[in-house]
Image 1 (tube, rainbow, N blue to C red):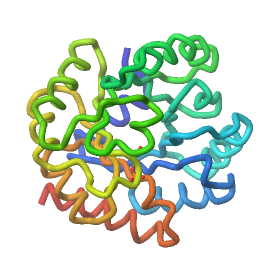
Image 2: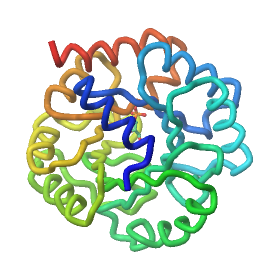
Image 3: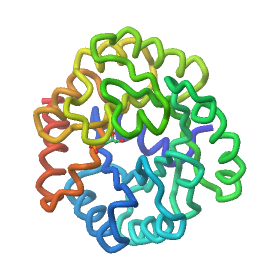
Image 4: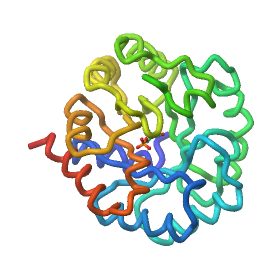
Length: 250
Ligand code: 1GP
């Protein structure tokens, strides 16, 4: 039951070791800006574009942003929804995710029940994802009513990830929160990666080549950066991150 976007990601990871995905927060951009960011990120070596944020963007604006990005790039556009309002028919795929350490059933299964029929109706490719908030957790942690896993409890993060895998999820995301002062520590990435057999996504606070290299060396399969692509020097910044990830294989 693996769709074409998921297959593309798995093949890219297989071929390149680890990959970068650029995250665009629809609330922070115009469609024109989103298309320019996406196209610069693509030419700098990013493998896909994720669209989503922790707060609410109007469905019309979200659709316009995605359409603009789709016109600008050939790489897949994957929704990263914080709620049912983050679903749009214009994307290629959706991280169909459950926030594994939320205390609110809405973020564990409620939003998913509401959103699933819409995902089907729109023909979006769902890619099952276990989302785990760690460290400070940032806005995502507050909105998602998470009990963030402290950075010094890597085994606890691994237990969450393994539970996600055993429930059938096909990717795990360790989220430090957008703009996190400290990204997910390599030790936590390492322990989680060793515990699961599915690809590991890491994001939150990654801003430099060395941080990207540290995350990839510790075992991250996909590194997501959001704030960084809002930078005026998108091309250079994304190139640095992609080079950092690639240097892990050298
Ligand atoms: C947030 O993990 C992502 O959901 C990316 O975080 O914006 O800090 O890169 P940054």
